[in-house]
Each structure stands twice: as C-alpha cells, then as structure tokens.
Amino acid sequence: MGKIKGSAVLLAVKLLRNRREQAAPFLPPRLAHYLDERIVVASWYPEEDLVALIKACQGAVPEVSYEVMGAMAARGHLEGVYADLLRRRTPTSARTLWKTQHDSGVLSITAETPHSTTYELVGWDHASIEYCRLLTGYFAEAHRLSGEREPTADHPRCRAQKHDRCTFVVRWRAD
Image 1 (cartoon, rainbow, N blue to C red):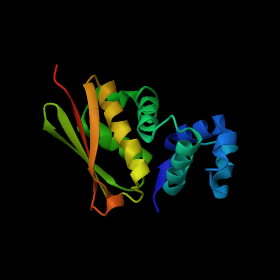
Image 2: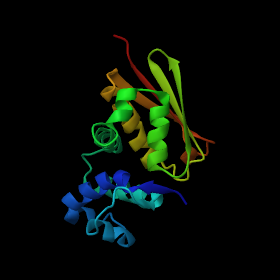
Image 3: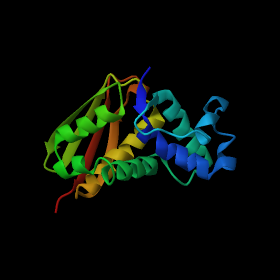
Image 4: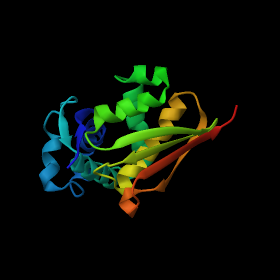
C-alpha cells in the first residue's frame, strides 16, 4: 500500500492533538499513537493512516471541512518548505510536489484554457471521497496562492467511485 510523507500527515495530527477529547471517539485505537509520537516530516507513513486521520479530523473538528483542510495543507506546503515550487509556477512543480509527498500515483497537469487547469492522478493507491475532497481544496488554494482570482475546483472523476483515475479541474476568474 502507498506511503505519504510526514509533512502531509502533520496537519491532521495537529488538528487532532488540539482537540484530543473530541477526537477520541473518531480516532481508531491503532492510530492513537499519532497523538503522542513525534511526526518526522521526512519519514514515510502509511497513506491509509492519513485517510483515517482526516476522517477523524472531520468528526472532531466538524467546522473544518475536508476542503478547508486541503487549503490549510496547501498553505503549509506552498508558503513553507515548498515555496520555491510556487514561485516557479510550472506544471512540473505540481508533479514534483506530488512525488515528494506520495510513493504512488502519477500526477499529470494540463492547462485546458487560459483560466482552467486539469489535474489527473493515475495509479494512486488511496483515493477516497474524503481524501479527494481534501485535494480539491488543496488544488484550488494552490491556484489562489499563485495569484489566480477566485479559483474553484471540481472532481468529476474519482477512483473511489470506480473510475480509472481521479480528475480535478480548477477554474478561476479572468482579470
């Protein structure tokens, strides 16, 4: 099964640590160790753990939607350690970021129009409706951080719904 870097797990863990009591009923016992152990941002963690952690976040912190978690993760990455990828603003930047965080899946990016971009993920081990909602927020926020006006993201095809790939389409307003 796929693995993900600790830097991607850290946001969910921080949210859960801040709401330990509320998180307890939603966090599977096998994942309780995440609330106490140090997360090593450069280490690999099971991606299935992240899926369960973000589901627990939604239960413990319902005011923070999956899309908002995705936007928070994008800001953490693109205003932090991966800020240089945002400055480059190339399709290879998004692919590079995906590869640094995931050991499964190939991300392709196509600029469909001057005001839209399509992201496709093929061969990704852990597509889930919840995780894909998080990615929808992530991609929209990445475009907002890049200077696009009022970006929105749709997810017309999902592996969790028996499609062969996950497709995300980000659109933004023309200036």
